[in-house]
Length: 214
Image 1 (cartoon, one colour):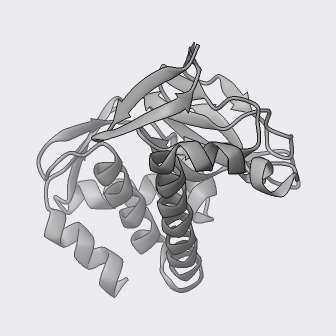
Image 2 (tube, one colour; image 1 turned 30 degrees about the horizontal axis):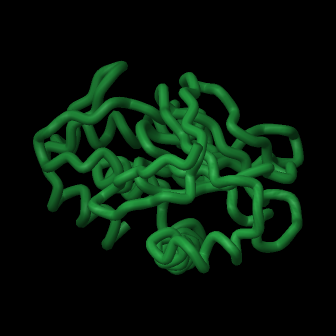
């Protein structure tokens, strides 16, 4: 049965099955052929790649209203990344039929996926610059700002810790110890407040300055 889903003011009618996934549950693996594309209706997931030693590396985080698992649908090749739940999430599946046919009948879906593809290209370019030209401090600050954006919180408001220091280290290309030292530096400098469960950015301009000058 086809489901009508409203996300961020847009109506989607092409998704016909919604399921609950638990924190840490893998939706699909990297290098696998995803059977369907997914709309994140509720919650948050992370896309990851698998390194030579079999370790997972976060590529990006995906929040409500975004679509994942469509690379193999377009290219008939395995997915470049895998997908795992960061929190308990509800994902809706796109029926197993040609996406071109879906696009003809669901213009909202087609336009949203095109926007997402363009946004992903921009994020990838920015990530390459950040990884190749910026210091560990700048990279760590960028990740914190990205999480603040994803959780849609303002300066001085807490957001939950969803990325372990090990994952963060893998994401920005450094060691876990280096990440811990950098976060502790931010804490001493009054840029952030944190505990085991939450982080709060207390000096937004200062953290942004770290991204620019480091």
